[in-house]
Image (tube, rainbow, N blue to C red):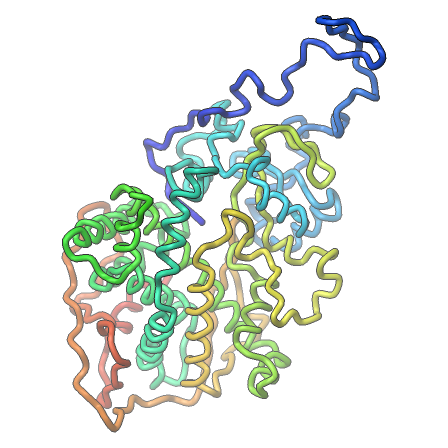
Length: 527
């Protein structure tokens, strides 16, 4: 889950931080008792010997490792073949490997499936509070570091532990659990039909930019409670923010401003949506806490579900065995999602966890304040749990893609429902969908946290717009709200945006050709 950096985010250590307390790990004791010798009130010190050495004390610390010998998680090697890099690190170091982040800051990358679960499930040893990071405390992380949008501490459940985490996370979990799952599928079904209606007559399309990148946001804005706020600028801003471009701060300002207006409106006009449920929860979230958690849910759900849809469609179109099983009824779309969640998790890495004290993990010596990166992609292909990567894993959900422990993804069921229903509806509407280019021509872009399919060009029998027998006039589209002041984003198309139709029964497809909202949007949205 990615969160943008705020200038006022404090970098001071949290209250009770082990690195700054009197009982910090590593503090020497005044003396030791000698077995067999009982002198009341007196501790007799003695030189430490091999028998007294702490386990792992002979292992090097992270900061002691030569930078020149460590591999970077950024740059050409990592971006060209992240999976290959993980396997090189596994062969050299085992379950836990030292790596370098931007600015050559050292961290531990967890490669083992079991080691990842250990870190996820033991917050007493591995905290989510980034203020514990020793690099922060020593002033080695600049405010302009590209790491800051991901690891800068904020008062959110994703950075909290203990009682505060339970308070904030409880509100988010209860709010998401209050979502009508049938309503989610109804939204997905209608919006899939609308998207297909735009490119269906052409008999060809690029499914990443024209389908996968937009279906999740269409649905999530409905669930959050802001359908009237949805528009080209919100979609563009969300994607731009997650890509970390030079305009990411301006894009974040746009998203935050839209959500702030939503929170203000819900004070007097509550509804059956996530925003209202957060505001009315017994945890008594402040308006700022409601806004920040809505932003995290909206952006994280969109980013991960986009990748899940794109990668699952890619597998369906390129794996003949899967397509045959799917069409023959021997496999379902949920089975395909499980396979993709094993082979290509929406997030390759999650940063991070911070050691609360000195400990051992995967044969490495972890010191208090060290950063640990959850290697979801690497852990999912750990040879210990998957000795044969070609063996299908239908129905097996013990992958790491949604995490585990107290910070396990609270919206995974909604994400799966959007991906599953959207793909199922797409294949129903376009049953002869096929890849339009050789598989080897497909390309990806990689960053240290995730890997994105650039494009998925397809072709199919053209699908003409049809009017249902019980046709009714399309519902009126919501009006476009004025833009938000701030640094300019790519300009909207000159024609007014009509937007997707409001919530309700699936709209009928009009017979006459027209240049709809999608065509106008794609004219400037492509990147």
